[in-house]
Length: 336
Image (cartoon, rainbow, N blue to C red):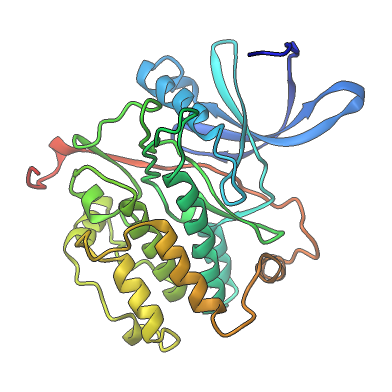
């Protein structure tokens, strides 16, 4: 029952373009309210050439409705879905920081190695966000069945304060929210997707755990073991390449960390982590079992020093996606 209604129109003033992806553009904007109230937000806008495509609009709107109620410290928050002059936009949390792709590039440019404890800490925060999303229910307590399907370097952000945020649920699977062509097309970053996703099979939350394992391995090694010259070659490596003994690739990786990686990257679903909580427990136990371990403040100090930020500042390139979509008819993958 509604107690009363407040009618108000938000006003957004676009400050600058901060990201341009294949299907959308993200801007930094100022949201204005009464008595000179100003809040900085990110505005995600559909590209004009997609604005009249019904299915794309349905998914854009579905993404906004899905993430509107995903309120968690490790997920970028959505504030509003709007429409102006026939163009839809999403107002969302502005993250002053970088995504993991930019983070990794800065490490390489400065010839720095990410401490393994921080690598594990980052992925443990991703696992926290996934554990929340995977078990999210609707208002009647029915599971939404969320699978992100695009856990990758571009969709994990680190704020200069040290917060880790999972973003871009644009190709997520969830009951009643997004148009799903699973089994006919495969969408996502080929070198981060799970084997079942890469082979056009129906995915469940364990698919995201494989992708989280790829993120962890890539942070530790400084390279993605599945990345090849083309998305299709990467997809084939995900399907067929032998998972290495990571202890032989980096001497910092001990037996326990190698076991975590092997289990996260198991192609056999029965051998993989059963849920994100289980992965989260193993990651946190690894970094905290002997006492003090990394925190948001530890990571924040590291990233600010890496990017030359004396304090949390204005350098930012927030959520965006260059999601690759591969049609089943364009591959030689056998039918499931």
